Length: 226
Image 1 (cartoon, rainbow, N blue to C red):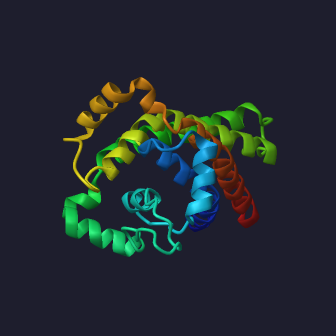
Image 2: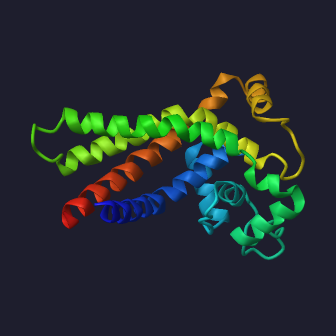
């Protein structure tokens, strides 16, 4: 059922994206800025001073827009650098050239390649472990397996996610890193090994409900069409 699986995956993925986007914004801020005292402080300050206004199709544009901290509707405040996703893309292309749009692409690729395997292996393994032979996994099993699959994948992905976010923000005002390896070394020298797990808590808090909903939607849509 290739068509049904594609549509089910698209709908469940969209549901997960809508649920997880606010958490993703907080995660990116914590990874790239040092002005927040923690997750709660970051959430409160974003809610008070900004609006969650962008769902960009590309990860670079998403990160740039999420790091835009100027209030949007307060008179006398600095104007935001980017007016929206299209303006952000055009500005990056104009100021940083075509390569600027691919900033952080290697880190993104290295982040996602192994974690997708971990993601599905964890889900299938947990479903198999807690489902009786010959039966479909229950809703509770799907929710728990999907949630823990998301957490497992983000535990593996967070170190390179930190580097990806920093590479994507590099060059916004001035260039700091000579490349991905230099970003890693500089980050460890300045902030210690713990820097690679910055944002892991918010990643995990986002990953469980997002992936639980994603897999539950996917399984139910397949059963409904099947």
